Image (cartoon, rainbow, N blue to C red):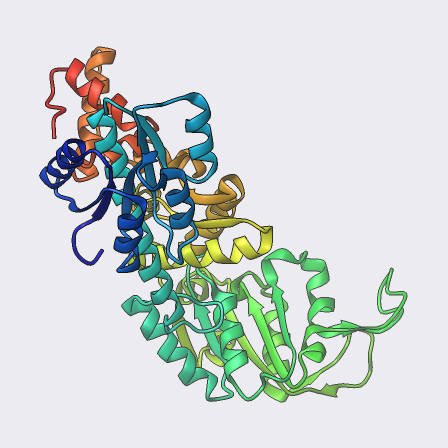
Length: 453
């Protein structure tokens, strides 16, 4: 945020107004004071405060009317209602109209401080989200590829180089890193963008059907071939053929693939004539291609024919700085898909994502975010919306509890460790632990720790 968190105090009793001003300034907030609805509106006309603490009964109107005016503002911010004439009906009406909370006099200053801390954390989080969205909007991504890290910038540059030619390329990287997305980006940026993009995953097709899948067949070529069918080479004519998991191709079929690539002609199973085709071939593997050649899984001559260019996709653990950007990208994509209105991730949730090694890479992150968006539906993604394995000891702060501890001591260590990892922010620590700030304060006092500000 730019500058201190600004609070508008609207209270007609001068003594109470002054007490509130002194308390809030002592806590580090910038404070403006008003004694009436008209004075408060005059302050708001100069700039909406980050939060308002407003009495219900005012000389020239009701604080509830002021609440309605502030909630209708272009940038509505939280309003906390206070009164000496508290009733359940008034509280319900205030909350119904959008009040952040409702306090009765004499005020519980610990609760007021917790409310202000929460509001300040929420405001900072929204500022962070705005910055993240702006970064996402100007991200130098390519197609569905997202990232600003150095490895991704280098990959984008290489994709543009490869797309400017018609040469074959071999894309390598762990499973889930987005090899097909890279192939599609090369196709979409190249001269063949108007032609078909045909993808075939060698690992997903039974060996007995692979030859027919690639080269097609004529009617009666084998039992069950009741009609002729074009293969992938034909379907990709004047476009791009993406051979995923090329090292999983049956070794007996690889010489035929090589011959087809070399002479630019394909013969369907059961056909007597060859047909010419015009296809750019991109291949991918999650294995080391050199090791696959050594192990006899990939023919050396086919490898050299495909490997005019090599593009290496980094695993997600080597570009952790892209995790917030990717997570927000998926939030917005799944909001559109599922009709949800999730804003983004709480800091604690994002911390769990950034502290995880992602063995399944971007595919795993995508699945985690879809689950979180569906569970959250609106507002923020909390840590509880993430899979349990992300919230387990392996994904946490590294807290180790030795055997033999009492439950009280274990609880004390957990609270202190959470406070430490959240920068001693009690509101954030409470959010991570799934309790309110008052509970944290009471626990600290009961356990003999300093719970004061």
